[in-house]
Image (cartoon, rainbow over all chains, first blue to last red; front, side, top):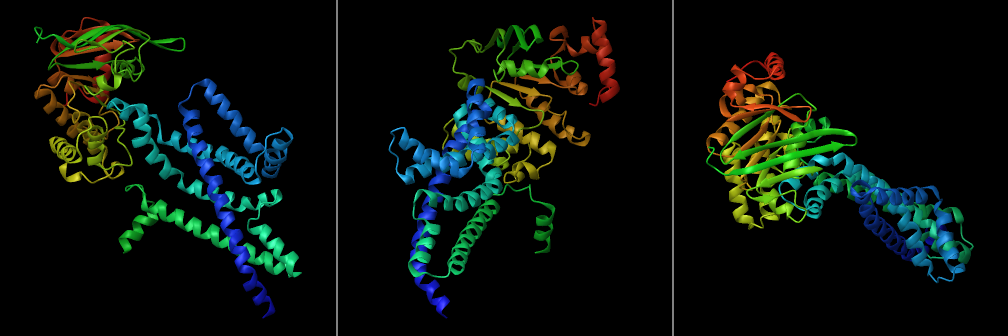
Length: 231
Length: 254
Protein backbone atom coordinates (compact mmCIF):
# COMPACT_ATOMS: atom_id res chain seq x y z
CA UNK A 1 0.00 0.00 0.00
CA UNK A 2 2.76 2.35 0.99
CA UNK A 3 4.48 1.55 -2.31
CA UNK A 4 1.41 2.40 -4.28
CA UNK A 5 1.07 5.72 -2.51
CA UNK A 6 4.71 6.49 -3.24
CA UNK A 7 4.13 5.80 -6.93
CA UNK A 8 0.94 7.83 -6.96
CA UNK A 9 2.62 10.79 -5.27
CA UNK A 10 5.57 10.69 -7.61
CA UNK A 11 3.48 10.56 -10.75
CA UNK A 12 3.00 14.33 -11.23
CA UNK A 13 6.74 14.92 -11.16
CA UNK A 14 7.40 11.94 -13.43
CA UNK A 15 4.78 13.07 -15.92
CA UNK A 16 6.31 16.52 -15.93
CA UNK A 17 9.60 14.83 -16.73
CA UNK A 18 7.87 12.79 -19.38
CA UNK A 19 6.75 15.95 -21.15
CA UNK A 20 10.37 17.11 -21.27
CA UNK A 21 11.35 13.68 -22.58
CA UNK A 22 8.76 13.98 -25.33
CA UNK A 23 9.83 17.50 -26.13
CA UNK A 24 13.45 16.35 -26.45
CA UNK A 25 12.43 13.38 -28.60
CA UNK A 26 10.51 15.65 -30.93
CA UNK A 27 13.37 18.13 -31.17
CA UNK A 28 16.02 15.45 -31.80
CA UNK A 29 13.93 13.60 -34.36
CA UNK A 30 12.82 16.83 -36.04
CA UNK A 31 16.33 18.18 -36.47
CA UNK A 32 17.55 14.72 -37.44
CA UNK A 33 14.80 14.43 -40.06
CA UNK A 34 15.43 17.80 -41.69
CA UNK A 35 19.20 17.44 -41.84
CA UNK A 36 18.99 13.72 -42.58
CA UNK A 37 16.70 14.00 -45.58
CA UNK A 38 18.65 16.87 -47.16
CA UNK A 39 21.90 14.97 -46.65
CA UNK A 40 20.39 11.79 -48.06
CA UNK A 41 19.51 13.57 -51.30
CA UNK A 42 22.91 15.23 -51.27
CA UNK A 43 24.57 11.87 -50.95
CA UNK A 44 22.64 10.38 -53.87
CA UNK A 45 22.28 13.32 -56.24
CA UNK A 46 25.12 15.60 -55.13
CA UNK A 47 28.51 15.96 -56.77
CA UNK A 48 31.63 14.14 -55.60
CA UNK A 49 32.53 16.87 -53.10
CA UNK A 50 29.10 16.94 -51.45
CA UNK A 51 29.03 13.18 -51.31
CA UNK A 52 32.41 13.00 -49.61
CA UNK A 53 31.62 15.70 -47.05
CA UNK A 54 28.32 14.03 -46.13
CA UNK A 55 29.92 10.60 -45.94
CA UNK A 56 32.54 11.91 -43.50
CA UNK A 57 29.89 13.70 -41.41
CA UNK A 58 27.76 10.59 -41.23
CA UNK A 59 30.68 8.33 -40.25
CA UNK A 60 31.95 10.72 -37.57
CA UNK A 61 28.58 11.11 -35.89
CA UNK A 62 27.88 7.42 -35.98
CA UNK A 63 31.25 6.50 -34.49
CA UNK A 64 31.18 8.75 -31.41
CA UNK A 65 29.21 7.61 -28.34
CA UNK A 66 26.16 9.72 -27.55
CA UNK A 67 27.42 10.70 -24.12
CA UNK A 68 30.73 11.89 -25.57
CA UNK A 69 28.84 13.98 -28.15
CA UNK A 70 26.73 15.52 -25.38
CA UNK A 71 29.80 16.46 -23.35
CA UNK A 72 31.58 17.78 -26.45
CA UNK A 73 28.72 20.06 -27.39
CA UNK A 74 27.99 21.26 -23.86
CA UNK A 75 31.31 21.46 -22.01
CA UNK A 76 33.42 21.57 -25.17
CA UNK A 77 31.58 24.54 -26.60
CA UNK A 78 31.80 26.33 -23.27
CA UNK A 79 35.57 26.00 -23.22
CA UNK A 80 35.66 27.49 -26.72
CA UNK A 81 33.79 30.46 -25.33
CA UNK A 82 30.50 29.62 -27.08
CA UNK A 83 27.63 29.73 -24.63
CA UNK A 84 25.05 27.09 -25.39
CA UNK A 85 22.28 26.13 -22.98
CA UNK A 86 22.08 22.51 -21.93
CA UNK A 87 18.92 22.12 -23.98
CA UNK A 88 20.44 23.55 -27.17
CA UNK A 89 23.64 21.52 -26.72
CA UNK A 90 21.54 18.39 -26.26
CA UNK A 91 19.49 19.16 -29.36
CA UNK A 92 22.59 19.69 -31.47
CA UNK A 93 24.42 16.63 -30.20
CA UNK A 94 21.52 14.21 -30.33
CA UNK A 95 19.71 15.79 -33.30
CA UNK A 96 22.79 15.76 -35.50
CA UNK A 97 23.60 12.27 -34.31
CA UNK A 98 20.13 11.16 -35.34
CA UNK A 99 20.52 12.95 -38.68
CA UNK A 100 23.50 10.74 -39.44
CA UNK A 101 21.41 7.63 -38.87
CA UNK A 102 18.34 9.03 -40.59
CA UNK A 103 20.34 10.08 -43.65
CA UNK A 104 21.27 6.43 -44.08
CA UNK A 105 17.64 5.32 -43.76
CA UNK A 106 16.57 7.82 -46.43
CA UNK A 107 19.58 7.18 -48.65
CA UNK A 108 18.71 3.49 -48.76
CA UNK A 109 15.12 4.36 -49.60
CA UNK A 110 16.12 6.78 -52.35
CA UNK A 111 18.37 4.17 -53.87
CA UNK A 112 15.70 1.50 -53.74
CA UNK A 113 13.20 3.82 -55.45
CA UNK A 114 15.74 3.97 -58.23
CA UNK A 115 16.85 6.37 -60.93
CA UNK A 116 14.10 5.21 -63.27
CA UNK A 117 11.41 7.08 -61.36
CA UNK A 118 13.41 10.27 -61.57
CA UNK A 119 14.03 9.73 -65.29
CA UNK A 120 10.35 9.16 -65.94
CA UNK A 121 9.30 12.33 -64.18
CA UNK A 122 12.06 14.42 -65.77
CA UNK A 123 11.00 13.08 -69.16
CA UNK A 124 7.57 14.64 -68.57
CA UNK A 125 9.24 18.01 -68.18
CA UNK A 126 9.20 18.14 -64.40
CA UNK A 127 12.06 19.97 -62.72
CA UNK A 128 14.33 18.03 -60.41
CA UNK A 129 12.80 19.75 -57.40
CA UNK A 130 9.24 18.93 -58.43
CA UNK A 131 10.27 15.36 -59.19
CA UNK A 132 11.65 15.01 -55.69
CA UNK A 133 8.53 16.51 -54.10
CA UNK A 134 5.87 14.67 -56.10
CA UNK A 135 7.55 11.43 -57.12
CA UNK A 136 10.55 10.57 -54.97
CA UNK A 137 9.60 11.85 -51.49
CA UNK A 138 6.16 10.21 -51.29
CA UNK A 139 7.80 6.90 -52.07
CA UNK A 140 10.84 7.15 -49.82
CA UNK A 141 8.79 8.34 -46.84
CA UNK A 142 6.61 5.25 -47.15
CA UNK A 143 9.63 2.98 -47.52
CA UNK A 144 11.34 4.59 -44.53
CA UNK A 145 8.57 4.11 -41.95
CA UNK A 146 9.74 0.71 -40.62
CA UNK A 147 13.38 1.80 -40.11
CA UNK A 148 12.22 5.17 -38.89
CA UNK A 149 10.12 3.52 -36.18
CA UNK A 150 13.31 1.95 -34.94
CA UNK A 151 15.11 5.29 -34.97
CA UNK A 152 12.20 6.84 -33.06
CA UNK A 153 12.50 4.22 -30.31
CA UNK A 154 16.27 4.65 -30.05
CA UNK A 155 16.11 8.44 -29.93
CA UNK A 156 13.33 8.43 -27.35
CA UNK A 157 15.23 6.10 -25.05
CA UNK A 158 18.49 7.98 -25.55
CA UNK A 159 16.92 11.19 -24.27
CA UNK A 160 17.62 9.72 -20.84
CA UNK A 161 21.32 10.42 -21.50
CA UNK A 162 20.83 14.18 -21.36
CA UNK A 163 20.29 13.63 -17.67
CA UNK A 164 24.07 13.99 -17.62
CA UNK A 165 23.75 17.64 -18.69
CA UNK A 166 21.37 18.38 -15.83
CA UNK A 167 18.23 18.59 -17.92
CA UNK A 168 15.28 17.47 -15.80
CA UNK A 169 13.74 14.93 -18.08
CA UNK A 170 11.96 11.86 -16.75
CA UNK A 171 14.97 9.94 -15.45
CA UNK A 172 16.30 12.94 -13.52
CA UNK A 173 12.84 13.54 -12.04
CA UNK A 174 12.96 9.95 -10.85
CA UNK A 175 16.36 10.52 -9.26
CA UNK A 176 15.01 13.61 -7.47
CA UNK A 177 12.07 11.66 -6.08
CA UNK A 178 14.35 8.95 -4.77
CA UNK A 179 16.59 11.54 -3.14
CA UNK A 180 13.70 13.51 -1.65
CA UNK A 181 11.75 10.62 -0.22
CA UNK A 182 14.62 8.27 0.58
CA UNK A 183 12.28 6.12 -1.41
CA UNK A 184 12.58 2.75 -2.94
CA UNK A 185 14.90 3.10 -5.97
CA UNK A 186 13.69 -0.12 -7.51
CA UNK A 187 10.10 1.00 -7.38
CA UNK A 188 10.73 4.42 -8.93
CA UNK A 189 13.01 3.04 -11.64
CA UNK A 190 10.42 0.43 -12.51
CA UNK A 191 7.79 3.17 -12.80
CA UNK A 192 10.12 5.15 -15.06
CA UNK A 193 10.82 2.03 -17.13
CA UNK A 194 7.11 1.34 -17.51
CA UNK A 195 6.47 4.89 -18.74
CA UNK A 196 9.33 4.54 -21.29
CA UNK A 197 7.82 1.27 -22.41
CA UNK A 198 4.36 2.79 -22.87
CA UNK A 199 5.80 5.70 -24.88
CA UNK A 200 7.83 3.51 -27.21
CA UNK A 201 5.02 0.99 -27.57
CA UNK A 202 2.37 3.62 -28.37
CA UNK A 203 4.69 5.39 -30.78
CA UNK A 204 5.53 2.18 -32.60
CA UNK A 205 1.84 1.32 -32.87
CA UNK A 206 1.19 4.75 -34.33
CA UNK A 207 3.89 4.29 -36.96
CA UNK A 208 2.69 0.86 -37.94
CA UNK A 209 -0.77 2.39 -38.32
CA UNK A 210 0.75 4.99 -40.67
CA UNK A 211 2.57 2.26 -42.55
CA UNK A 212 -0.68 0.42 -43.18
CA UNK A 213 -2.61 3.56 -44.02
CA UNK A 214 -0.12 4.63 -46.68
CA UNK A 215 0.67 1.21 -48.03
CA UNK A 216 0.80 1.15 -51.83
CA UNK A 217 -1.77 -1.35 -53.13
CA UNK A 218 -0.33 -4.31 -54.96
CA UNK A 219 2.63 -4.80 -52.63
CA UNK A 220 0.79 -6.70 -49.89
CA UNK A 221 2.57 -9.70 -48.44
CA UNK A 222 1.13 -13.13 -48.99
CA UNK A 223 -0.29 -13.33 -45.47
CA UNK A 224 -2.11 -10.04 -45.81
CA UNK A 225 -3.64 -11.11 -49.10
CA UNK A 226 -4.87 -14.33 -47.58
CA UNK A 227 -6.12 -12.42 -44.56
CA UNK A 228 -8.19 -10.21 -46.85
CA UNK A 229 -9.60 -13.28 -48.56
CA UNK A 230 -10.51 -14.87 -45.24
CA UNK A 231 -12.50 -11.77 -44.30
CA UNK B 1 6.84 12.97 -96.49
CA UNK B 2 10.07 14.58 -97.65
CA UNK B 3 8.44 17.93 -98.22
CA UNK B 4 7.82 18.27 -94.47
CA UNK B 5 10.47 20.10 -92.49
CA UNK B 6 12.08 17.77 -89.96
CA UNK B 7 10.61 17.78 -86.46
CA UNK B 8 13.76 16.24 -85.09
CA UNK B 9 17.25 16.74 -86.38
CA UNK B 10 20.36 15.05 -84.98
CA UNK B 11 23.76 16.31 -86.01
CA UNK B 12 26.85 14.28 -85.27
CA UNK B 13 25.85 13.11 -81.78
CA UNK B 14 28.75 11.80 -79.71
CA UNK B 15 28.70 10.39 -76.21
CA UNK B 16 31.35 8.65 -74.13
CA UNK B 17 31.16 6.90 -70.81
CA UNK B 18 34.65 7.13 -69.40
CA UNK B 19 36.98 6.06 -72.16
CA UNK B 20 34.34 4.13 -74.05
CA UNK B 21 32.73 6.04 -76.88
CA UNK B 22 29.15 4.80 -77.09
CA UNK B 23 27.95 7.11 -79.85
CA UNK B 24 30.44 8.00 -82.54
CA UNK B 25 28.71 10.70 -84.50
CA UNK B 26 25.11 9.87 -85.30
CA UNK B 27 23.06 12.09 -87.59
CA UNK B 28 19.56 11.68 -88.92
CA UNK B 29 16.26 13.46 -89.13
CA UNK B 30 12.64 12.71 -88.52
CA UNK B 31 9.78 14.37 -90.39
CA UNK B 32 6.34 15.07 -89.03
CA UNK B 33 4.21 11.96 -88.98
CA UNK B 34 7.12 9.68 -89.68
CA UNK B 35 7.83 6.50 -87.73
CA UNK B 36 11.44 5.48 -87.59
CA UNK B 37 12.69 2.25 -86.07
CA UNK B 38 16.14 2.05 -84.53
CA UNK B 39 17.62 -1.42 -84.45
CA UNK B 40 20.98 -2.84 -83.56
CA UNK B 41 22.79 -5.23 -81.24
CA UNK B 42 22.49 -4.53 -77.53
CA UNK B 43 25.04 -2.18 -76.01
CA UNK B 44 25.30 -0.34 -79.25
CA UNK B 45 24.00 2.99 -77.96
CA UNK B 46 20.36 2.93 -79.03
CA UNK B 47 18.94 3.76 -75.60
CA UNK B 48 21.69 6.28 -75.01
CA UNK B 49 20.78 7.94 -78.29
CA UNK B 50 17.14 8.28 -77.23
CA UNK B 51 18.20 9.80 -73.92
CA UNK B 52 20.53 12.15 -75.77
CA UNK B 53 17.52 13.43 -77.68
CA UNK B 54 15.52 14.51 -74.63
CA UNK B 55 18.72 15.39 -72.78
CA UNK B 56 18.22 12.93 -69.93
CA UNK B 57 21.77 12.04 -70.96
CA UNK B 58 23.19 15.16 -72.60
CA UNK B 59 25.50 14.29 -75.50
CA UNK B 60 29.16 15.33 -75.31
CA UNK B 61 29.11 16.73 -78.81
CA UNK B 62 26.67 17.34 -81.58
CA UNK B 63 23.35 19.09 -81.88
CA UNK B 64 19.76 18.05 -81.29
CA UNK B 65 17.11 20.23 -82.90
CA UNK B 66 13.43 19.89 -82.12
CA UNK B 67 11.04 21.96 -84.18
CA UNK B 68 13.69 24.56 -84.88
CA UNK B 69 14.95 24.82 -81.29
CA UNK B 70 18.38 23.57 -80.39
CA UNK B 71 18.03 21.39 -77.28
CA UNK B 72 21.76 21.00 -76.86
CA UNK B 73 21.97 24.75 -76.33
CA UNK B 74 22.67 25.29 -72.62
CA UNK B 75 20.29 28.24 -72.51
CA UNK B 76 17.23 26.32 -73.64
CA UNK B 77 14.50 25.61 -71.05
CA UNK B 78 14.84 21.85 -71.15
CA UNK B 79 11.80 21.19 -68.96
CA UNK B 80 9.68 23.04 -71.47
CA UNK B 81 11.24 21.23 -74.40
CA UNK B 82 10.75 17.82 -72.80
CA UNK B 83 7.00 18.38 -72.65
CA UNK B 84 7.01 18.07 -76.42
CA UNK B 85 8.69 14.68 -76.36
CA UNK B 86 6.95 11.74 -74.77
CA UNK B 87 9.15 8.89 -73.60
CA UNK B 88 8.19 5.27 -73.07
CA UNK B 89 10.59 3.10 -71.10
CA UNK B 90 11.59 -0.52 -71.32
CA UNK B 91 10.64 -1.10 -67.69
CA UNK B 92 7.58 1.19 -67.82
CA UNK B 93 8.82 3.37 -64.95
CA UNK B 94 5.32 4.11 -63.75
CA UNK B 95 5.17 6.09 -60.51
CA UNK B 96 4.74 3.24 -58.07
CA UNK B 97 2.80 5.21 -55.45
CA UNK B 98 0.12 6.50 -57.83
CA UNK B 99 -2.76 4.69 -59.50
CA UNK B 100 -3.07 4.62 -63.28
CA UNK B 101 -5.16 7.78 -63.44
CA UNK B 102 -2.79 9.78 -61.27
CA UNK B 103 0.21 8.51 -63.19
CA UNK B 104 -1.26 10.03 -66.32
CA UNK B 105 -2.53 13.12 -64.49
CA UNK B 106 0.63 14.12 -62.62
CA UNK B 107 2.33 15.82 -65.56
CA UNK B 108 -0.86 17.64 -66.44
CA UNK B 109 -1.38 19.20 -63.02
CA UNK B 110 2.24 19.71 -61.97
CA UNK B 111 3.86 20.59 -65.28
CA UNK B 112 1.06 21.94 -67.45
CA UNK B 113 -0.67 23.50 -64.41
CA UNK B 114 -4.01 22.21 -65.64
CA UNK B 115 -6.96 22.39 -63.27
CA UNK B 116 -7.78 19.23 -61.35
CA UNK B 117 -11.01 18.68 -63.23
CA UNK B 118 -9.60 19.26 -66.69
CA UNK B 119 -6.56 17.11 -65.97
CA UNK B 120 -8.78 14.32 -64.74
CA UNK B 121 -10.91 14.19 -67.85
CA UNK B 122 -7.87 14.49 -70.11
CA UNK B 123 -6.18 11.64 -68.23
CA UNK B 124 -9.29 9.49 -68.53
CA UNK B 125 -9.37 10.22 -72.25
CA UNK B 126 -5.80 9.00 -72.64
CA UNK B 127 -6.48 5.86 -70.60
CA UNK B 128 -9.45 5.18 -72.83
CA UNK B 129 -7.25 5.57 -75.88
CA UNK B 130 -5.01 2.74 -74.66
CA UNK B 131 -8.03 0.69 -73.56
CA UNK B 132 -7.51 1.01 -69.83
CA UNK B 133 -10.29 3.30 -68.65
CA UNK B 134 -11.55 0.47 -66.45
CA UNK B 135 -8.19 0.23 -64.66
CA UNK B 136 -7.94 3.91 -63.75
CA UNK B 137 -7.78 3.24 -60.02
CA UNK B 138 -5.37 0.29 -60.20
CA UNK B 139 -1.84 0.76 -58.96
CA UNK B 140 1.13 -0.26 -61.12
CA UNK B 141 1.84 -3.32 -58.97
CA UNK B 142 -1.73 -4.51 -59.63
CA UNK B 143 -1.38 -4.31 -63.42
CA UNK B 144 0.18 -6.74 -65.86
CA UNK B 145 3.30 -5.67 -67.71
CA UNK B 146 1.35 -4.97 -70.87
CA UNK B 147 -1.16 -2.84 -69.00
CA UNK B 148 1.63 -0.96 -67.23
CA UNK B 149 3.26 -0.17 -70.52
CA UNK B 150 -0.02 1.08 -71.95
CA UNK B 151 -0.40 3.37 -68.94
CA UNK B 152 3.17 4.49 -69.65
CA UNK B 153 2.17 5.36 -73.20
CA UNK B 154 -0.96 7.16 -71.99
CA UNK B 155 1.14 9.14 -69.51
CA UNK B 156 3.44 10.30 -72.30
CA UNK B 157 0.58 11.03 -74.70
CA UNK B 158 -1.28 13.13 -72.14
CA UNK B 159 1.33 15.86 -72.52
CA UNK B 160 0.36 16.20 -76.20
CA UNK B 161 3.88 15.59 -77.44
CA UNK B 162 5.01 16.32 -80.97
CA UNK B 163 7.31 13.33 -80.87
CA UNK B 164 7.22 9.99 -79.08
CA UNK B 165 10.38 8.14 -78.09
CA UNK B 166 10.02 4.43 -77.41
CA UNK B 167 12.90 2.67 -75.67
CA UNK B 168 12.41 -1.05 -76.24
CA UNK B 169 8.79 -0.83 -75.10
CA UNK B 170 8.09 -4.55 -75.40
CA UNK B 171 11.44 -6.07 -74.40
CA UNK B 172 10.45 -6.62 -70.78
CA UNK B 173 7.08 -8.16 -71.59
CA UNK B 174 5.92 -11.75 -71.71
CA UNK B 175 5.34 -12.76 -75.33
CA UNK B 176 1.55 -12.90 -74.93
CA UNK B 177 1.47 -9.31 -73.68
CA UNK B 178 3.51 -7.80 -76.50
CA UNK B 179 0.57 -7.68 -78.88
CA UNK B 180 -1.57 -5.28 -76.85
CA UNK B 181 1.27 -2.77 -76.60
CA UNK B 182 2.17 -3.04 -80.29
CA UNK B 183 -1.47 -2.49 -81.17
CA UNK B 184 -1.50 0.81 -79.30
CA UNK B 185 1.72 1.82 -81.05
CA UNK B 186 0.39 0.90 -84.47
CA UNK B 187 -2.78 2.92 -83.86
CA UNK B 188 -0.62 5.82 -82.83
CA UNK B 189 1.58 5.61 -85.92
CA UNK B 190 -1.47 5.39 -88.13
CA UNK B 191 -2.99 8.41 -86.42
CA UNK B 192 0.00 10.38 -87.61
CA UNK B 193 2.19 10.59 -84.50
CA UNK B 194 5.88 11.13 -85.11
CA UNK B 195 7.67 8.22 -83.52
CA UNK B 196 11.20 7.03 -82.92
CA UNK B 197 11.16 3.42 -81.75
CA UNK B 198 14.01 1.29 -80.47
CA UNK B 199 12.79 -2.27 -80.81
CA UNK B 200 13.56 -5.82 -81.82
CA UNK B 201 10.02 -6.34 -83.07
CA UNK B 202 10.76 -6.86 -86.73
CA UNK B 203 7.09 -7.37 -87.48
CA UNK B 204 6.39 -3.87 -86.26
CA UNK B 205 9.33 -2.51 -88.23
CA UNK B 206 8.30 -4.27 -91.38
CA UNK B 207 4.66 -3.28 -91.37
CA UNK B 208 4.48 0.09 -89.65
CA UNK B 209 7.60 2.15 -89.93
CA UNK B 210 8.73 4.39 -92.74
CA UNK B 211 12.41 3.90 -92.26
CA UNK B 212 14.74 1.61 -90.38
CA UNK B 213 18.05 2.77 -88.96
CA UNK B 214 20.60 0.10 -88.17
CA UNK B 215 23.01 1.20 -85.48
CA UNK B 216 26.12 -0.72 -84.52
CA UNK B 217 29.07 0.25 -82.32
CA UNK B 218 27.78 3.78 -82.02
CA UNK B 219 27.45 4.39 -85.74
CA UNK B 220 24.72 4.16 -88.33
CA UNK B 221 25.55 1.22 -90.59
CA UNK B 222 22.59 1.46 -92.86
CA UNK B 223 19.24 3.17 -93.13
CA UNK B 224 16.39 2.73 -95.52
CA UNK B 225 12.83 1.67 -96.08
CA UNK B 226 11.71 -1.60 -94.48
CA UNK B 227 11.37 -3.11 -97.90
CA UNK B 228 14.90 -2.36 -98.93
CA UNK B 229 16.08 -3.40 -95.53
CA UNK B 230 14.51 -6.82 -95.39
CA UNK B 231 14.73 -7.72 -99.06
CA UNK B 232 17.99 -6.26 -100.13
CA UNK B 233 20.20 -4.96 -97.33
CA UNK B 234 23.32 -3.24 -98.60
CA UNK B 235 25.65 -4.32 -95.86
CA UNK B 236 26.68 -7.77 -94.83
CA UNK B 237 26.40 -6.83 -91.16
CA UNK B 238 22.80 -5.77 -91.60
CA UNK B 239 21.92 -9.10 -93.13
CA UNK B 240 23.70 -11.03 -90.39
CA UNK B 241 21.90 -9.02 -87.74
CA UNK B 242 18.50 -9.47 -89.34
CA UNK B 243 19.07 -13.21 -89.61
CA UNK B 244 20.00 -13.42 -85.96
CA UNK B 245 17.03 -11.33 -84.88
CA UNK B 246 14.53 -13.29 -86.91
CA UNK B 247 15.97 -16.48 -85.43
CA UNK B 248 15.37 -15.10 -81.94
CA UNK B 249 12.12 -13.27 -82.34
CA UNK B 250 10.56 -14.97 -85.37
CA UNK B 251 10.59 -13.40 -88.80
CA UNK B 252 7.44 -11.37 -89.07
CA UNK B 253 4.74 -11.69 -86.49
CA UNK B 254 2.32 -9.45 -88.22
